[in-house]
Figure 1: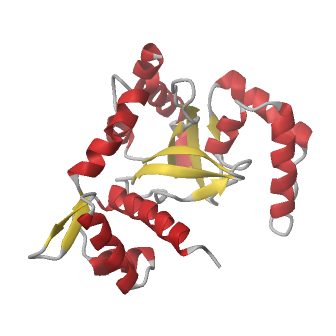
Figure 2: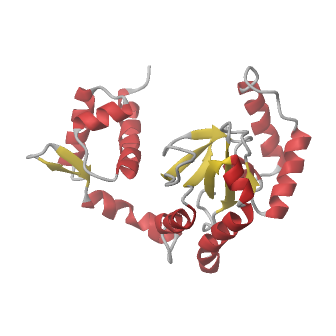
Figure 3: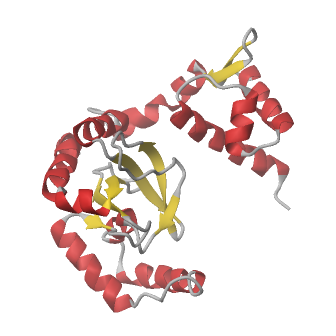
Length: 249
């Protein structure tokens, strides 16, 4: 059974991810229904965070929203990582130019996790949620992140991934993964082409980040045909978006 304190800490982080996507005040009921938490514990969590000054609470409407103390406590992260442009502004640029789903991703164990997502505005589109997990070896983000890893680490991760997925998909051979890694390194981008989500593909490149910051990717997701047919333009837009970060680095 999970430690109650650990469970509460995880819920607090999930609450922040919820508001990152929700982007407006929310009631206890809206939070509990969306995240699947008991309403009573959701109420206690929000009230505790509001009492500590991390959330603002409108007593008249009962709505909650992250507050200024939280902003000030975390603002340095963005300033340290990106002195010239924020990640969100970078994502918004690509989103406005393409209309596709735009994602920031990073490794989480044998998966990659979408740290932030801007949903597509197109009629035919691919949907991802903040916090969604994709397989490390079968996603565009994962394939891109593998280009930063040594062969030994890839081999250890692959053995674990093959064991975990044995009942779902055929195992991947290390030599094939390493060969694909070299191709991805040379071309500077990766695509999933339905290997992560059937019918959808993502086009990912590495985000230039300062030394010591966890590697991340910027990617565009959509129906396979839309992304493949427009790949040269989409890749150019991704590279243009991250170019100021390379200049800063």
